[in-house]
Image 1 (tube, rainbow, N blue to C red):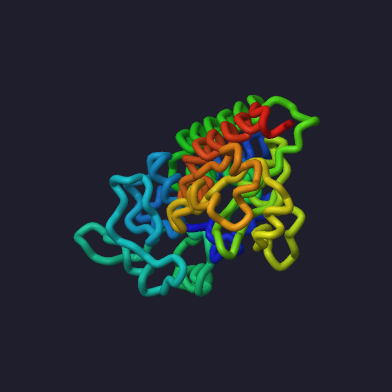
Image 2: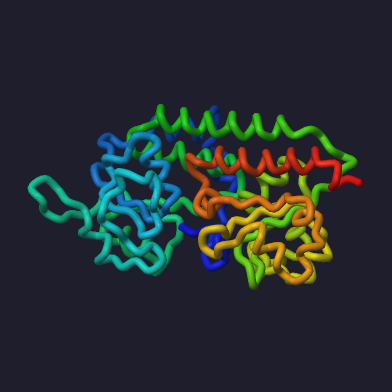
Length: 314
């Protein structure tokens, strides 16, 4: 997944209410834990880079026989069989697994983060179990997906541990940021330059930033047509005067603090002038799985640094 790219992020709208029901201690969570399949799936196909990371992190890697073209983490041990998740065909999925003796067979489970070509309906009609894990809009939703994969693959305990660790990490990050009612920390989060795509507080990463008390300049430009991922004009960004800039396009688009400073009018921004332009790893920034803690650590450290820099608050 490149869910931080505008071509795919606009798809990632999740139902928070259902996700929240899967939190520990709820009836739904108890039912999910008790409703584990009698036999764990022997062949899992992951058409979601986030799900791929999670499956390997919870110990289900040996069950994964194929992944999508964008899955690249963990860096070792991924299966060689690949499927284009943005343009999948039934044929590319339905016979991709290998049974004992080498015969091709249907997957026991397919995980998707985008229902391209109505692949879920088509595979389900052939008796293949498909679960959708669209990008969540909250931490609760992300953790619920981790636990769902643990329950369905037979790795409940390890999935619970991973979710709990991420929850503790993020809670600690939020607590580490001092309250700052007198400091309006404006933030621009860039998904793609020229045109400038960003994300609002209604998105997953946007909600993480909001929990740190920042002001997201993209919120004022969101419309019903952009599901949380508006295109911003250069003039608007300059007028909003962000004090902190995150670049989630360092790999795809080679964005750097230096390249931002060369954009017309950007050199005058406090974020650029006072060196608060932070480059993020595109993949880590666009996924909501095991490396979520890494992303939150980076965002939080940048927020703390900006709040502590007297040059921004003269």
